[in-house]
Amino acid sequence: MAMTDLDTKLTKYAPVVLSVFRIVFGLLFTLHGTQKLFGFPSATSSGTVAAGTWPYWYAGVLEVVLGLLILTGLFTRIAAFIASGEMAYAFFSAHFPKAFWPIDNGGEPSVLFCFGFLLLVFTGGGAIALDNVIRRKSAAPAV
Image (cartoon, rainbow, N blue to C red):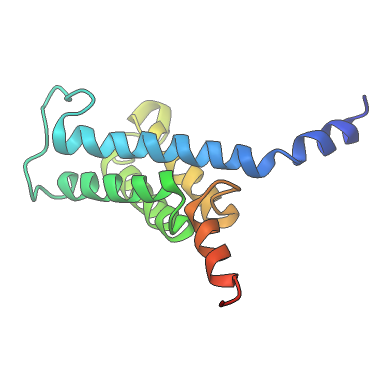
């Protein structure tokens, strides 16, 4: 099988696989927020974050709300844009001051989330997303 045949076969699945990527990323991001706010699915060694604590409580709220939007594919591009910015802020404010390289400063998850969400800003939510349902309903002719 030639490489172009493989490309052709795999490309037709890209919109669905992109949705799976978005769903997994949204779920993981949501869980980062629920861990901070509610200690679910597991509490950190320091426990949950007290309400109003800057920036961690606000980050938890953003992670739950944006994570659920991204998970469902609702307002995917704008939610991913904000989430990407939050992760860039997290990296440069909490991790980068400790060391330059993410492997040394514990910032790998922040970098991965940042660029994963940046990808979703430009690709959208894929084939399985609420954004598509809304788009189809608004494009449907009035009866």
